[in-house]
Length: 246
Ligand code: PEP
Image (cartoon, rainbow, N blue to C red):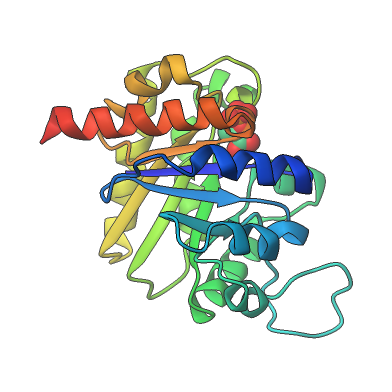
């Protein structure tokens, strides 16, 4: 299981320090990975705070070029140098607000892999697409167009846009349907290992239910990850779920 905290453009230095203090005596489980995605400016600071803890570090985005004239962007190689292991690509906020398209995301994924980062590629339909009955085809084409060639391992986050930050969620069958579709599409592309995370209004009170759904390998959490107690409660729900299946 993989539990990802996407802090977006939130938390200042003091708040990050307080957050990490709360994790100090927490017993992380080897089979449930926790990963925090702070804003770029705090990656180094967070890395210095979590040096000896079982938490991984990730970035919320990266550019597809190694270096060059890309003002305001960040190279996957720089992220790697600062201790990142994962990078979120194609979050719906990037797609909507910065016009990132499938082709751009695929190039970023290639470059992230070359730099030694694991991409977490976000896919998800709008409410209009869901209501028109086209969610399956839409996700299929996102997977087809975003997934890098010749990659062995990949993470995908299924994040229905209408569920992000709204408190509204797909039902269990809808989540299972899309997660198994994503896994089947990845098999067609000869990917050895694919992990599919669910993202969208994950909270402590629904986390156990979400993680009990077939083909859910973890969660990508936005709002609830800003509160360390909520984040840990979701983490504990993942551990409980693992104990149920094993
Ligand atoms: C997100 O933005 O990736 C997300 C899942 O947000 P939230 O958990 O707040 O719905």
